[in-house]
Length: 206
Image (tube, rainbow, N blue to C red):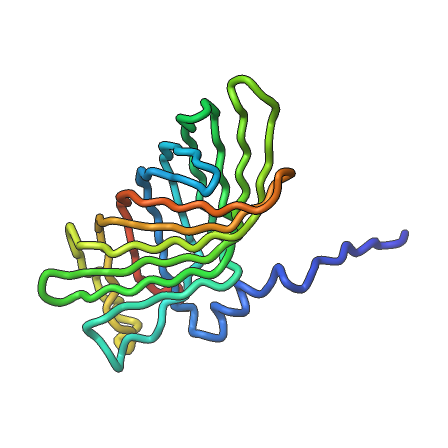
């Protein structure tokens, strides 16, 4: 009997290799928010967004213990937005696929943070009196966060060399910019709003 092996694209292993090379140091980011979106065609939309990135890599904090950082490269991240366009009326579903993300948090004093992301964007639009439209492009999102709470994780007795882990709840303003293309050509999108984020810096060492 012959055995058939199915080939798996090599790029699918990059997030795992990325984590292994940097010591299994990981971070989780999840958030939700609302924003006002406008584009260069004069359209205005109200959007609600849910984001999650479960595979970010924590940057070694020993040299700067007052700060925590994480980066994402081809992560398992996604952001999904839904909303209503006001002029003309339409329903919108916006999906941002895995891209490159970054977080920074100052864990002393009152506590502040930064969240950023560059990713492909897909806009699915259903006008109330027209036909379905799809736009594809790239987006940059970022926000300045103020910490609502900061909780230090219990240390593992078996890993005294690991730095502290932190769970952070934060909220703040965010902005976004995107360049998109559909069957009518190129256009730009701008957005501003508020976002809640949960940030967890932890280790998954063996």
